[in-house]
Length: 324
Ligand SMILES: NC(=O)c1ccc[n+]([C@@H]2O[C@H](COP(=O)([O-])OP(=O)(O)OC[C@H]3O[C@@H](n4cnc5c(N)ncnc54)[C@H](OP(=O)(O)O)[C@@H]3O)[C@@H](O)[C@H]2O)c1
Image (cartoon, rainbow, N blue to C red):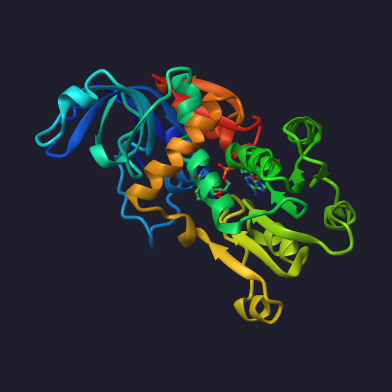
C-alpha cells in the first residue's frame, strides 16, 4: 500500500511516497481504510530529528497519529458486527497514519457522526480532543478573560471558539492581517497581532488592567514566557505548546508565589477512556455546527512534504489535512 515515509531526519523533502506491506489488525485491533489524516506541528519537529530524548523514532518510518476513515477488518476479540463498515476517527500514537490503511486499537476508535466529513473529523482527532481537555482543565467561567496565544493554528482556532462558548471574554494572538481577521471571525473579542514589536503591551491593553484569568499558550518560548506576565495572580496558565522550539519556561516558584496554577503537556496526555469521551464530545459539537474546524489546506498523501512545509512556514490558516 501507499504511504508517506520519513526516509531520514531532515527538512520536509525527506517525507516521500513509498510502498510498504499491508498492515494486519492484530488481537484487539481494527484495520481502517484511511480517508483523511491529521498533521500536527509535533510531526514536523519529529521529522526534523527533534525530541530524541522523549521519542524513539528511527527512519525510515511512516508518521501520523490521527486518522479518519472506515473500518474494513477487525482482529481477534473485536466485535465485527459493531465495527465493520463504520466511519471512525482513531488516535494511533505517533506512527502509521500517513497511509492508505492503518491499524488502531479498538479502544482508541471513536465513531463519527454521519454529518461530519472525514477531513473535518481528521482536523479534530488531536486538536479537538486536546482543546476540549484544556477547557475542562482550566475551567474558564462566564465573565472571565481567556488569552489564547497562537490563536490562528489548528488548536488555537478551536480554543477561541470553546472559550467563547464557555462564556469567557477571549483575546487571541496571531501574526498578520489574514490570521488576525480569522481569529476575530471565530468570535474573539480582541486580537493582538504578534508582528507588532510591542504586542505584549497591546495584549495588556486588550485584557484590561487585571490581565487574563486563563492563558492557553500554544506557542511557548519567549512569547509564552511574556504571556505568563499577563496572567492574573491566582489564575491558570497552560504551557502546552512549543512551535518556537520549547515550552514556556515558567519558574514554578514564581507561579506558586503568585498562586497561578500551572498546567503542562503532561496534563493533556489522556488515557484511552478520556480520549474517547472528549473525542465524542468534540465531534458532536462540530456535527451540531457549534465548533468549526478551520482547514487552511488539504494535500494528497503523495504530497505530504508540502503539507509539512506549509505547517513550518506558517503560510496557511488553521489546520493542514492529508487526503487519501
Ligand atoms: N494538537 C494537539 O492535540 C496538541 C496536544 C498537545 C500539545 N499541542 C501543542 O500545541 C501547540 C499548538 O498546536 P496547534 O495544533 O495549534 O499548532 P499549529 O496549527 O501549528 O499552530 C501553531 C501556531 O503557533 C504560532 N507560532 C508562533 N511562533 C511560532 C514559531 N516560531 N513557529 C511556528 N509557529 C509559531 C503560529 O501562528 P502565527 O503564525 O499566527 O504566529 C502557528 O499557526 C503545538 O506546539 C502543539 O505541539 C498540540
